[in-house]
Length: 149
Image (cartoon, rainbow, N blue to C red; front, side, top):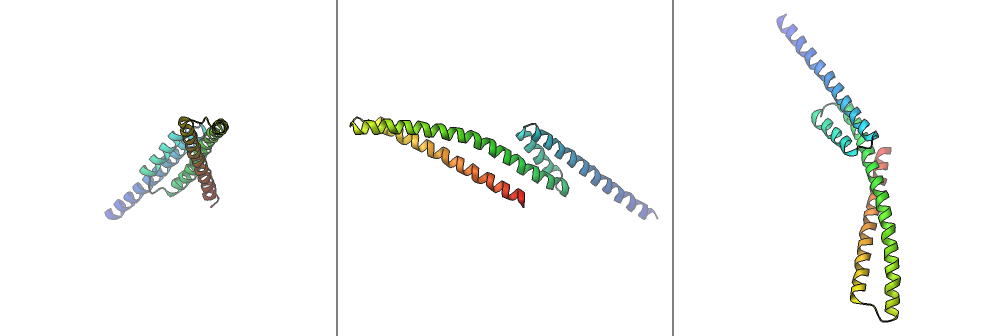
């Protein structure tokens, strides 16, 4: 009888700890959601990392954290894409203006090595921004595909 009561007490203790873990994990997930809604993406990421580390066995909370993490990464990529798009437009305008100037100087045989170097460097910078823009677009597309799954 004594062993049975100890066993029952142990089972109840573990069951209550499991519920407490679920509640704590749900609270942490809610905090992450609140931070996300307030635009505090780094704080939301930190909450999700804490949830994953502290509650590796609370599957439902981890599933919710995964969905929220995808939303966070999507929002961050969309924000970065918007600023990169502005940079790309400015770089294109700068390159076009510089290209016209260099072309005029080439026709007049007055193009200097410095101008040509500046043109090349401007083109390289524009290409780098374009690559970043395309990478972010691909990342957004990938995240949206994963969200549909």
